[in-house]
Length: 153
Image (cartoon, rainbow, N blue to C red):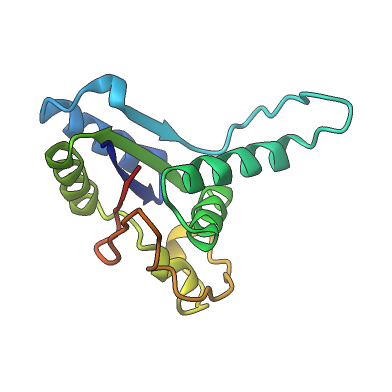
């Protein structure tokens, strides 16, 4: 069973530092992904809205690995506000190590973005709406607190 650590970071430079530390810890490079909002969003069809296509795709991908709809929305909103996601998939031990590295670099807690409804200086200062309980997932796990989350799928 694969396990994925997901961390949201306030800037591409911090996400790059996370990837460098993952590389230095011998984490398999082909199991690391970094994702920010594309600057050039080309139209993929007559009815396409590039930004919406990107956000729907990201939300579906996050839900496929175990994020709730509310968690996925929080991550999408974080990316929309200039944040960058880092995904690291592997064995349980590898994902735990990746999560530790992400947290050392200040992975933003989803609850920080949506739990209080307060502006965050880290992601453009915009207010996000409060979500309901995001901790229950059937057949999947996520760990709250400390920023990075882990999903088993």
